[in-house]
Image (tube, rainbow, N blue to C red):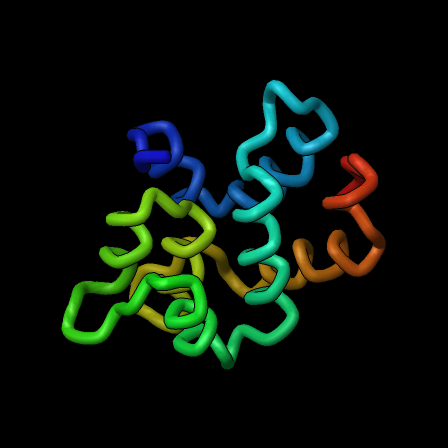
Length: 115
């Protein structure tokens, strides 16, 4: 998935987490597939391990601008992970907590769209 202008607006407005959750219940409107959700779930469980997570999924950022490895692979979730702890994060702490809670309730697996 390339980062379109619309997705850029969603990230800058810090609406991405709510959009992922709200749209997940309808398969044709889902923002992330199961693989991308897995990356995001792993990140939300332990944001401090972002570098290890990026390496594990082949999105090495060493010597590159934050998010470029993930963007090269077309990974929106990876892009969000890579931008964590930068001056321009894709997900703020509230969004990470919102997603963490959603994952813990089984939202990604059950189609639960409740925030």
